Image (tube, rainbow over all chains, first blue to last red; front, side, top):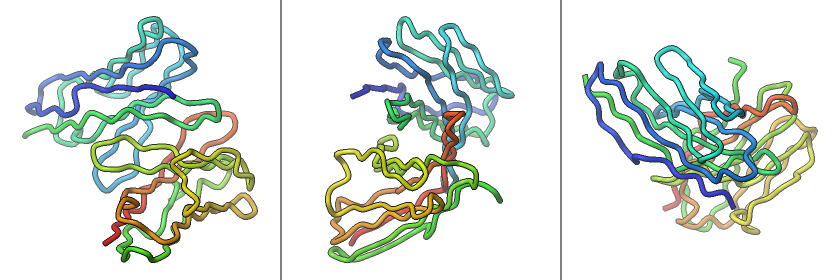
Length: 111
Length: 113
């Protein structure tokens, strides 16, 4: 059973602040790591799939890094906007590619 | 809209009733997954189809739960004799065999009174 942990559980930032959260996972038998953004009343949206140690991916103001040797990934948001308010989930695939999710980081960006 | 769709979006039922949810995946996706999400937790895997074959089931999927995917197209998830503990968001996701990114629907929120 994969143990995927995310911190912090929730975060409130002011508009314009930059922020980051952590996803921790077992470093053995790593295959891939997925980041999703889930806004209230919408579908979870795929942000990144990361596979290689040292990977860095970027999508607009959001970026993510991966360290498979120590078992963590960081998600960064630069210049947070109210529309970034969402729950950010990381997940690792199992043998049938079913995803094991962390409990998420709930981000609230205050205007 | 060519994304994953789920119906209904909300379902309120009384304990002991049966409920059925439907998921329509992205048309060319041969893999379909069901997850359940409860408050404060991330989604938890329930079951997985490749085409019409149900290949894996989580131990969370008690014998009151059954899922089908006839002809490898849409899927249904039925819960018999619902219990209050079944109250959750039920999510469906689909993917191709080549890319592992799973595309999620908006979910069905079930409330059991």
